Length: 254
Image (cartoon, rainbow, N blue to C red; front, top):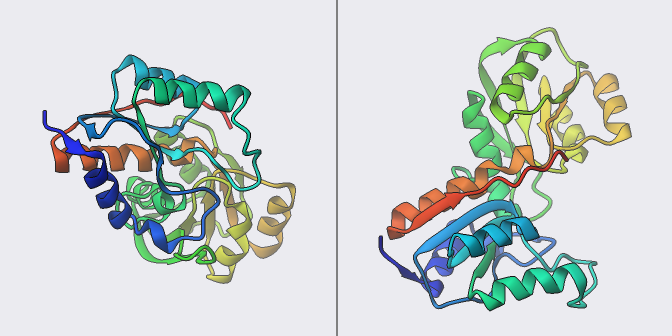
């Protein structure tokens, strides 16, 4: 296996994901500086202590995640849980590289593009552009499906039973997808005339919107809908720079 400089890998990833184009809730790119060269990457959804511990155990040079640290509004104090996570990364020379919205929105490697491809969605366009780039994909399914059929397909893909609110037409032909906590985009999906909208989380009002606006709604789990992007980006970087890569899924029912 080869190796690449930290700067080259981060610069390429920032460019690939257009990281500077987003108004995000946390810094994108290199969040914690580790060793200068990288040959082994561990990727995952969230840089929790369990995933950091795996990165240490595997001798990773970089931990690549969707949910990193230093979120807007959180305490800046390095104490308790935050201190323990940072201490483990710094003591072992592990770079923490995180991409939040850029890893939702990428047209090939992103969470939503990956979900669309896996579900057999022919992408027609993107919506939900308030953060600098459109985050959500929409399009046509290869074949019309009932709400129960699409729910079963999602369950098989994500290994998780979705919450299904069957508020739309008998057959679902068009679908919008936005991973994570994007239930607020259901109105935009309805404005586009879509038959169904899929995301990670649900709010109380989301159900009423689905019923009253005539659109099916699928809440499939925040974590479950955001596994694919970090894995796809890690695999892409490993192939491009001849690196070792391992995706580690730390289970989270949320």
